[in-house]
Image (tube, rainbow, N blue to C red):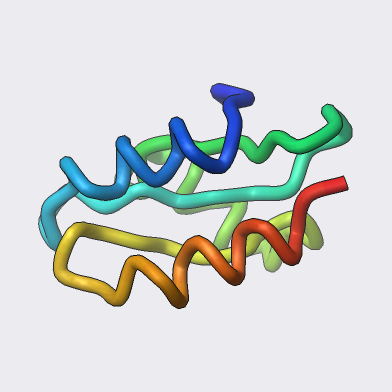
Length: 76
């Protein structure tokens, strides 16, 4: 996983396509989230297993204000 700030995560999401979205999970680092490619086998399994830290899957076609609000509500 890749722990990064919400701002850096938003930059990754802005470059993500609907065919290659970014999955975001909570992490224990202050003001950071885990942002990874949603299509990997490991990530897909975590989502299917209903990982309690899963926040959502995002790409550039989505509402950035809503995404950022959601991410900021889920950081420690």
